[in-house]
Image (cartoon, rainbow, N blue to C red; front, side, top):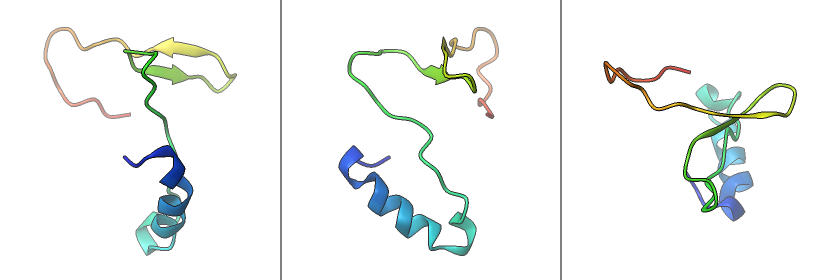
Length: 60
């Protein structure tokens, strides 16, 4: 996670690494949205619900 104004520089450096050639910005933090909001392929939004029972790591 980096500050928004440093994102392009960080991404350029990361893509310069052999394992980072496909690196991408995948989200941003906003004070106005206290939940994780996913953007759909069509440009819509949906909330990422909190896990209920077994707190397993989320693999996306």
